[in-house]
Image (tube, rainbow over all chains, first blue to last red; front, top):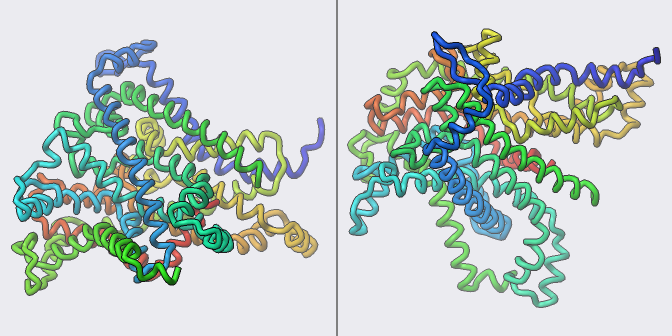
Length: 292
Length: 273
């Protein structure tokens, strides 16, 4: 038997504690989710049994699933580009010679450190019909009141706005970090060339920020899947599922309707989405590592 | 730049930046307004309205916030201690040791950056039930301890350490754990600080998994307690909900205002790596 190299032994020993934790709480539940999705919901009389793809057929036939999938897609489309654009704008402003810059930066960043639940409490009051702040302002401007969270056509929009508010300042930080690495000589050179600020931004700054934009984009996509805390306060997915997102539906299915196998089936959809995202990101990372 | 500082365009831009800042901080300012005034002034912005602490008193007596604070404090401490322990060891393994399967293990670890514990609530609940850890603080914290993010950050930090430092320590008789504690950990201190700040604020604010895994006052963290307290069906008025909300965010908010630079820097460090 070949002698075990000490670096192999130490490497494995050092990784082992984290490895056990990851196996227990990340790898096993991931595999178990797929496995569970092939079983029926057990009842007291009839225990859970293997049913193949029946849960998936049920999901495809479930109108709520399609509604939720559509909502999640709109949620992603509504939150990701807007919060990234606002974040970039914030970073450019905070990075320029702005009066009261520290204060402005603080204002932009503060939502990041607030719990979503607490933020939702405050926003709930903004959105409330009649007594809410939005309606009060609307009335002052001569507009009628509106039940923002109770109207299926605006509920998801209200959720999206709260999310953008919560996220933009967080993404700003990454842009700020990237902007500070742009050498000032570049700006001087552009000024000598007579480039306008517009040209400077689109031809120099924006391309240089591309890796950051990709990084932020992936983060924003992951967040659009997992950031659902405010639903619990603002709409609970209603009215009539109009603002229900996929992960919230998973929660509801598992812990309100106690249908674990169907919740697992829905989770598979999330896992596959995130898995594809991981593949895209790892490819992107590979490219970045090469020129480091 | 000096010339354009006075132009109209620049003035408009500064105005827009300030307006956005005001818009972004408005919800928080509003919460302050509602919490410190009698409920009659919730939407009546009379600058001469009387100030009061009554709302805080009512909120404090309505729900066991003292217990929730203790639970959250225990939770973030436990999670942070666990993360430092597991991520330090694993980060060291990935940074400095050659072993078969290392790259595969590292790739599998990084998968957790995408497949977050939030997504696995259904199966993690079964596992916690199997371990008898439902409704315990440990049950809330365990899935987050071997954090891929932390392992990645510390691996990067440890890789920056010059080999000569390690060799010097070895000459003085340090074993591989001695080298880790005497050389690597001290060098990575700023990374620990950054990661610690991000971790504490994440877990102070975390909601979904704690909601799933707890079901009693003895384990519920602040966020879950606040959600139950603020539910519309509880019939508590706005001023009191605002007061409760401010209480929950106060420790983090005060820390942020005091150490703004470190916070921003930490989130930057954690993001760039």
